[in-house]
Structure formats: structure tokens, C-alpha cells
Length: 95
Image (cartoon, rainbow, N blue to C red):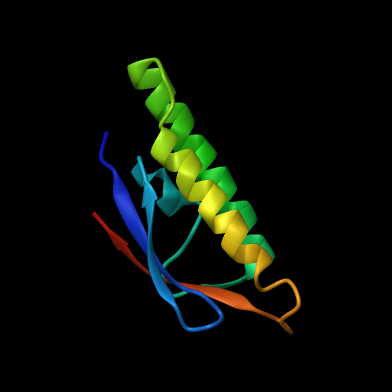
């Protein structure tokens, strides 16, 4: 299963590479798009859960690293709850 990274820029300017165990993330996020932080967290959850389901279907168990990545995204998103109109920019998909 081809894993990939998706590079994002958080509202504070921090650039981060996020992990997905599947390329299905491309069906949920788009490069050069800016998403409100809450929307980005929801889309990331949908993408990483779908990726985890693909891993489970193929290997009989889910991907712990996908769950860790999702928890990290959710935790980081909370930091921007009080910011006015914060957005996350998807910069690239990295195979």
C-alpha cells in the first residue's frame, strides 16, 4: 500500500509533513487549497480513517501511525480555536 505525506502550513506559519498510509488522502484534500482549521481537521479525519480502513482490509489490522497522526492534527487544531478565521494550507503531496 503506497504511503504518502501531505505537507501543510498551519495558521502560525509552521510547515508540517503529515503521514497517511494510503494515497486516498488525495480524495479528501487538494493541493493549493486553504481550509478553515476545523474543516481541515474533519477532512483529515475522514481521509485517515479511510486510509486506515484500506490498511485493515489488506493486512487484517489498522495502521497505528495513522491514528497517531490524526490525534496530532486534532491536538494542533485546538491551538487555533481562538484565532480569527484560521486556515490550513495544503502545500503538496509527497509520495
